[in-house]
Structures are given as structure tokens and as C-alpha cells.
Amino acid sequence: MSSQTITVIKGDGIGPSIVEAAIQVLDKVGCNFNYEYVEAGLTALEATGELLPQTTLDAIARNKITLKGPLTTPVGEGFTSINVTLRKKFNLYSNVRPVISFKGTKARYENIDIITVRENTEGMYSGAGQVVKNEGELAEAMSIVTREGSERIVEFAFELARRENRKKVTIVHKANILKSTSGLFLKTAREVALRYPDIQASEMIVDNACMQLVMNPQQFDVIVTTNLFGDILSDLCAGLVGGLGMAPGANIGKDCAIFEAVHGSAPDIAGKNLANPSSVILASIQMLEYLGMKDKAEKILAALTDVIASGDRTTRDLGGSHGTTDFTAAMLERL
Ligand code: ATP
Ligand code: MG
Image: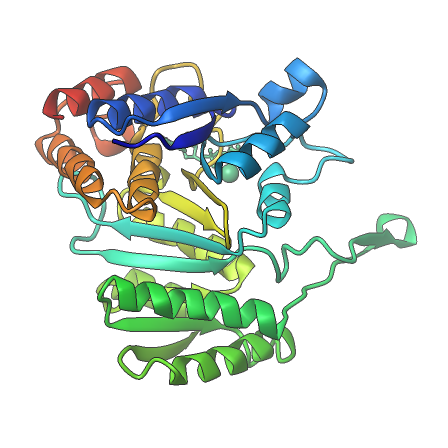
């Protein structure tokens, strides 16, 4: 029996309802986690005056494993994205975003099983060099790519491919135009790929990758790419399997990991019991796999697969007419 403590951030908007659903599911399969609840985002700002209180940072560092709902960063000056801050602060350099087809969704495709491995700390999202000049007529920002940063993310992708018996890693880049930054990423990725002769490496320019993902998504297995491209491609991938409600993500560093939904706080449906909790339930499955609790992960995945395939109390985004709580009840019954 586990005595692992998980830091839980329920988050903003639809966050509390879908995180609560995931916790019920984890408890139902007998994970026996202890939960330390802390706040971040708008909820924290209102309660403490800070978006990311020190107690929250301490809990994330102490427990190493965090399950997190979406966080809203207020629009306006002086607020840097909380997600970006967390990823940088804990050096969570890998963002692992798997998508798989579930029978019973409104998705246009079947048999999709793609993992996007997105570099999480560099590139266009490094936040460096942001200035607005000439009274607002000119804006600048820096894209930073390092050999070390590229090497560790590509290694992470190939190691993941090897561990999970995957056949192919596609390196997505734009080195033909962004010669210095994307060029360094591609060059480094090619060198890393040579160290994994058992896994097929391919290269694709990002615009072509977008078209190929829509035309023939089944050709993809693992994708590894820089921060901005990974952000966009992983939402595209979510769209292939039925939308953001089906898309989880893991932010993984050397000694800390944060598991979350890919989507935001969905203010348009918040508080209406409409959100699909699958994203956070799938993130919990990623968390269990990370913790080596494969049996429980498989159990939850089987229940989720069955709820969606049978259309039993599914949410609107999946073509159903039920709410978060009914969907969760259908999950709990099966477990
Ligand atoms: P934020 O500013 O927090 O990123 P957003 O306005 O960008 O929020 P997202 O949360 O990214 O919105 O969601 C985009 C769209 O997808 C919205 O229409 C939202 O309702 C829908 N959506 C997101 N998550 C879910 C979910 N779990 N279930 C159902 N619909 C969802
Ligand atoms: Mg959003």
C-alpha cells in the first residue's frame, strides 16, 4: 500500500470539478494517496494576494508529485504565466502529451496513438528579451535554444520510445528558416538519434507536420519538438481524438513532476457541471505510470474506455448530454 503524498492544486474555472473527479477515481481504485491541497492562480490571488504562494511552491518541492487543474493568469502587465513560471522554477523540461483514440467520441479518426514530447523551458517561451519600443510600434522577444536543452529533451523522447516499445520518433523543426535556433535543435537531435539505432528517427518541417497530422495521423508515433511548435501541435493532436477534454499532459523534470490537463480553465463552461473530466483522469493515469503503479493505471483506462464507448452518461463535448458528476459516477460504478 502506498503512503505517497500528492500535492493537489484544484485550480481555476472548471479545475476544482474535474480534479475532484480524478481524486474520486484514484481513491476508488485504492491508491491510498495522501493529498496536500494548496492553491495557485486566481483562487490563490484572491485568498493570499499572490498567484503562486510560497507554501504552494514548498509543497510541490516537498512531495515531488503534483496533480493540477488549469490555472488562470490574469491578463495584464506584471503577471507572467503561472504555468510557465512553474515549469521554469522546477526545471520541468519535458512536457509529455499523449493522445489516443477512444471509440465513442466525435473524433474524425480512429487508431491514433501519438505522444508529443514538447521542450518546456526554452524557445519562444523562454520569456527572455521582451521589449516594446518606439512607443508601442515595435516589439521584440528572444528565442533561446541551447545544445544542452535540446539534447536532454530529445534523449527524453528516445528513452520514452524505447521504454514504451515505440517504433518511431519524428523530430519536428523549422531549421530551413529559423536557421540558428531550430537549426541547433535539429543538429543536436540528429546526433542523439544516432545513439538509438533500435528506434526509427524521422524529420519533418513543422508546417508539413501540421498537414501530415491532418491527412495521415496514423503515421506518427512519438513527436519531439521545441516549445512553441509542441504547444500548437499537441492541441492539434487533441483535436484528432475528440478535443481538449481528452488531452492530458505531464511536466517532468529531474526530481519533480506536475500532471495536468492540456486545456485552460474554460471560463465559458465553468460552474455549469459541463466539463469533461477525462483530461485530468488521463493525467492521473500518466501519474500512476510515472509512479510505477501500472495495474491501477490500466484499470482506470479500461473504465474510461468503456464509459466513452458505451456513451454512458458522457459529457456534451463527447456527444452526450450529461455533466461532470454523472460522468464521474459512471466511472466509479465501473471501478
Ligand atoms: P484559459 O484562458 O484558461 O486558457 P481558454 O478560454 O483558452 O481558457 P480553454 O480552457 O483552453 O479556454 O478551452 C478552450 C475551449 O475548449 C473552450 O470552449 C472550453 O469550453 C473547451 N474545453 C476545455 N476544456 C474542456 C473540458 N475539460 N471539457 C469540455 N470542454 C472543454
Ligand atoms: Mg487556453
